[in-house]
Image (cartoon, rainbow, N blue to C red; front, side):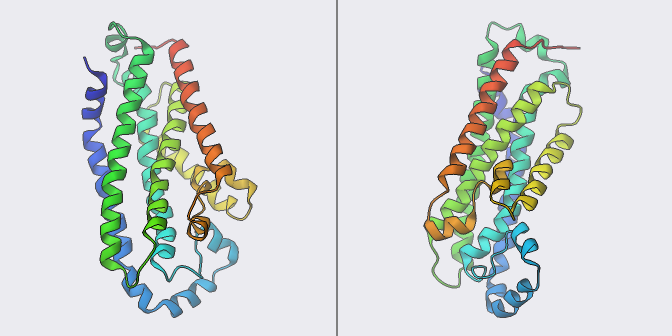
Length: 263
């Protein structure tokens, strides 16, 4: 039994749905850009009426929102929110599915180690996320070139888009550690939504303080910084790597040692 291919097929439908949702969102949001750019002065005046704290919480940069990349950095926060839900859902599902469906006894009695089982599941889930990001990235670039009103930095656009994959991998790892600790998950989507929105709201509050950004993956990538420097902030990249690696390693250790209840 090839666990990797089996899991990949199992994620096929949800991967397709989430990919179409993300592509649909970027098409919808970017299609509004030409109209907004024509009335950018009035739009900026409207945004300037918002309190500074609200603008930071919503990721609004009045000075750059008239450019394609500036506008994209604003709408991307909500695209990454949907992507985070997909990743968290996958992370929580992979180690709790057998216990929910009462098939753990069938899987764990096969001549294969728990490490092999979990690693195959992880690779299948990561492959699904990668396919989602490839399809999304290509679609986003095509739409951006269709709606652009002037030339824009494709490098910056790509760097912003790539943070979707990074955020998803982080959320996936966090979802895994949650699932192996709390095995009996009754509703994966409900737990996924709760955790992701908790991180999202922490990010909105943390937007006003630099140190608060370390507590939520949604703030590890500052889009204004990316536009100005054409790179990521290394301190947050290191935190993201440590959080992801730590969560994955801990998940494997706990999964290998814990008792798996099949009833």
